[in-house]
Length: 546
Image 1 (cartoon, rainbow, N blue to C red):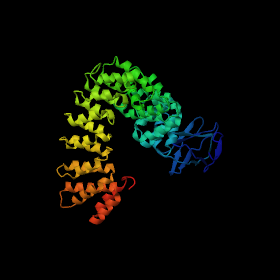
Image 2: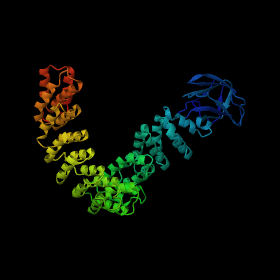
Image 3: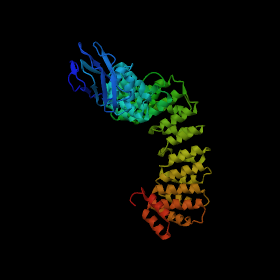
Image 4: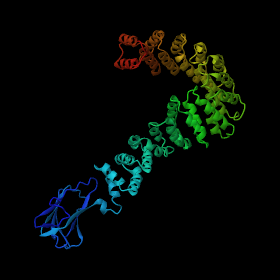
């Protein structure tokens, strides 16, 4: 009050005033309260003036002490300056005021939540949280339905309290895509004290693992917080799996993954999930793999459910004893051997280990095509398996198995002839697999064979196009003459569209291998701007050194 201390009786003459300049942030001023002195009367007639509206005449019903008289402000007014001008003589013992917090039956919490989206939103939320458990509970309950702006403010305010229930609410807010970044930043600001709250929601909000992974804590603590994900529903498990796998890989690089195996739950599916994700994240020579293999073999003895058995195969392969057991399974012996899917998974698990070649070669003779295909894929690049894979590529009755054999032979130069022979297969699936394999085969004779295939008019145009793409991938300058011939022969606009497409592909392959030669060809052929642009696109990121 500019006129003096409101707690001391202040004599007023007609025309004098009392003035209030409230600084209440998100809280609005709702009324002024006037108290008469012990002896004397308040002025009866007043003029209420505000900087947000026209003056209002006010007549008090009773002006004698004791008691306070309230002068209400218009609904919705948020003035920065309020004055009461006395129109009669009198005195004031005390000037007080009432805010929206006092006027609300819930202590003003609803008003503060409503203000969360306004200019004073941060202050409103801090004030609501300062009102104790009731205020905190109200903010937490409102958080899922708040607007994006208000929710981002709320997660910051809740995290700043450091209280467990508030931290958990912020962790749950990670599920909202548009709020997740703010929630993650707020939780990272809290640091280690937030990990319990974050861990409590991992099974329902898998992206909470990203916050755990970024905390400056030991891997034992961080991986311990990830354990709830192991028992999560399938959808949540799949979402959180990449982050968990990355966490285990990082822990392994620091020799800190062992506590994960030692602390795994005994329940299912948590235990077998935990062992499998560890096996996926570890290098084959990591010493922790032997511990995981031991635990997986122990569980395999009593496991009967397919999903559990399937998950245990990969960690079982972690030591020689486990790989021997998987070899037996792939050969059709022992528990689970009658299930083709388990045999195929055993082949995939063995594919990581160099000492499993014999077992995988045996898998090429399985009666079920998907097991043979899995075994062929697992043998990729192994010199000791080239002869067996050649036989499969030439003779297996299932195109999918022959295609898997072609892919497995791709890195072996001694298999180039077998792959070239597969280009004459009746199955398009096998031919395409052979073309892809030849694109990466290191043998020097491959390029000429691919160019000849691309030039063969009796071949399907789509396969010829894939042959041209394979030639481009090889970056072999020996292909340029053949590609230029194709571009010149098939560039005529009178040809069918599919033939012209081959000519354009050949020109693009030339540009990829040698941009200068492709540009020179364009200059001679007086190509249109579209062709020139296509060549420049193909030249970008082309073969190095040209």
